[in-house]
Length: 122
Image 1 (cartoon, rainbow, N blue to C red):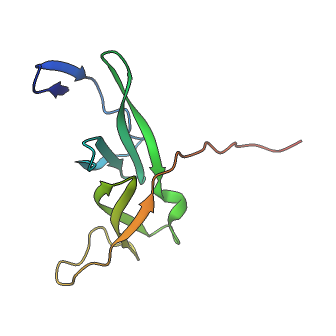
Image 2: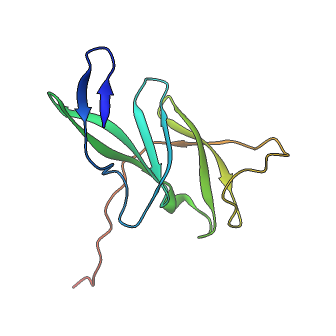
Image 3: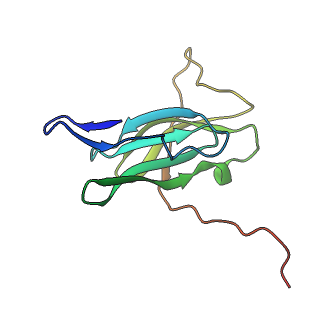
């Protein structure tokens, strides 16, 4: 449930629909312009957007799966700043950055994911 703390209104409730089927929630945070962001274990970054008066919905804003160089790679989100995901690229199946070293960060511009069609062209 998402509450507006100044008016005590419920803005959104129910399941976190930004999660892909079989995916789990891996990160939640706010962008520098106070938009609520969430990333799932499939690497889909979504933003909670207002779809009408008192209606909110999750919108995908970046699919990091297509940005991976191998299937073992993933991205550790830090924040979303000025329309870019600031993250640490993880290679070789690592699930979190090495705490003993200063991580190298990368920025990925937000872009709406496109659906890929499945099937044969005739």
